[in-house]
Every structure is written in C-alpha cells, then in structure tokens.
Image (cartoon, rainbow, N blue to C red; front, side, top):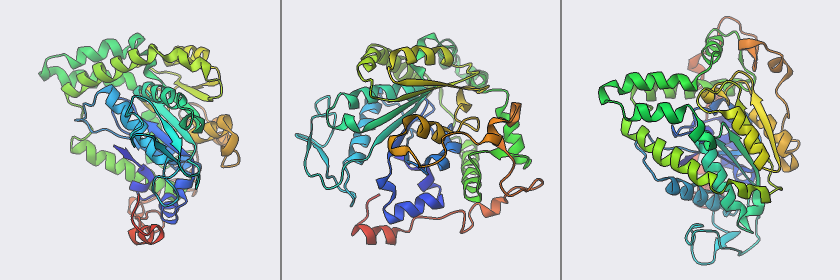
Length: 399
C-alpha cells in the first residue's frame, strides 16, 4: 500500500542513499493521494523533494474499497513503524505497551524503550481526499505525547474538507449512479473538473524540447519523468488507471463524504496545536473543489498556517510544474530543513508568463531534440537496487 516511487523507478541518487543506509536518516515525508489512489499528481516534484526527504506514497489499486477508518489506520500504522525503526531497520525507539499496532486501543499508548537512535521527523502531505486523511491522521498523532512531538509539518493541497460544498459532490454521484452504458461518457465529462487551460500546452513544450519544468533540471530527473510517463501510458492501455463505476460510487460515499463529515466534526481541535506549522495550498482555477475559499477557512482554524495559491492551476495540476513544493516546505517549516536546498522557485520559472510559468529552458541547451528515451534506462540515469549491498550492510535484508 505504501511505496517509494523514486526507489521503485530506479532514480540513482535515492537508490544510492538507500544502499548506503542514508535514506532512513532523512525526515520522513508521507504523501496521501486523492481518491484516485495514485501518486501521479505530484510525481514531477519527487526528485527535488528527495533532496530533503525520504518520500513515501500511499497508493491504492482501482479495485480497493477499503473503509475510511481502515485507510486511516493503515497510514498511522505505517508512520509508527517507520519512525520506530533503528539504524538496522528493526524496532527500537517507540513501542506500544500492549501491542505493536498504534491503533490497538483506538489511540497511541507509547513508551520509550531504548534511546539508541531517535525516530525521524514526520511531514505529512495530503492532496484532495488525502487532505482529509492527512488532517485526521495528524490529529491522532498530535494527541500522542511521544509520537506527536515528531510531527514537524502538515501540507494540505486542495483539501477535500470542503467536499460537501463542491462541484464534485453534485456531479460525482450523478456519474456514479448513471446507467452503465453511459458511464464512460459521463466519466469523461466529469474529468474536465480536474483540468486547467495550461497543462496540455506545457506538456507540448516538453515534447517539443522548448522547455522543461524548473524542477526537472538534470538528465537523471528527466529520465525519471520519462520512465514514469511511459509507465503511465502502459497502465492506461492495460486499463489499470480506469476506475470502475462501483469503485467511484464507493469512494465518493465512503471516502470523500464519510471522511469529510468525520473530519469536520473534529477539525476545530487543531486550534489547540499552535506549534504545528501547516501549509495550505490551493489551485487558482480549481473547478472541482472551492479550494481558495477552503484555504481561507482552514487558515482561520489552523493557528500556525500559511496559504499559497498556485496561479492558474486546476485541481489535478496544482502540484505540477507551477510550484516548487520542496522549496515552499523548506522555507515555511525551516528548522531541520534549513540549508537542505533552495527556498524559492527559480527566478526564470517565476518570471514565465502564461504557459511558461514554472518552466525554464532545457538544462542541456537542446532546442530540437530532448533526451532520447533510449537513455532513460542508461547506467547514469537509471539504477536498480543492489540487494547484495543492502544485505551486507544490514546483516539481513530490510527495506
């Protein structure tokens, strides 16, 4: 259910850090996706995020119909397990007095066992439906005296905490309950809620080698982008990205509606946690959710928060090329992140107008042909994990 996309896609810097045991020493960033259950939306951000964080993503197959509370428990269990590992990959710092599951009794009952190596800092990023889940998980973590002190930042992107006031809440159920023979047509119509006017044009700039997102500025990063794009195309052809009608109905009702109602009943509790810095990001032209209005509302509830409106972006593209998410997180969360990279989008990208906002000329100066897809898997741009090195370092295999 949880994955490391950069490790899975053979991104060399992350593979090397993993093999040497450095990756687990970085702050843990947990990304929780929209109700599509994929990590497609922020994938361009991942290479730059990996310079500061160990990036992990929650993913769910299109057949997944977990209950909302089951998803929440899975996230909390995962975070607990990751921050409890010692340098050899085993549990060390935190443990439950009665169980290894942090939700065994509905909350955390933690105690310190041995302070061999302190647990890593936790940063949670939730997008759309993931914004509901991230907020709910954060409240449970904050409510625990031991684990709560390690939650250093929360980022909410187009948070679906406003689902009941959204266009999606009216259009979605119509699509989910339409006659099956109309479903694909209606689903295509609903997809317009997630787009914006520049996403396709920026893709054209990339294909024509006229520009690249400013966060894709090396051959390794371009190769990662290319491999992910090819993988997405393969999954699309195989039907793995197609959401069945029953799955759509389930997720609208059991994830978005149930989740938003549960979160709304306890969201005011955040007012007592003024030490938690929270970035609240909204797409400037989100047709799916009233994200700008919701960002303003959330900022009035979260005492230590900052709103960011990403200009001209639709719901699914807010974390595309028009924001440098790692830079924004380093700047606002500061602390241990200070000095780990830039704290603002590159000047050339900020100055871009229209379709060029967030873009910059290719790093290699090529204006006719970009990096050949044949090089996406070359030795310098792709690297598989060497299991022998990991086993040798650990004295046994632990991922």
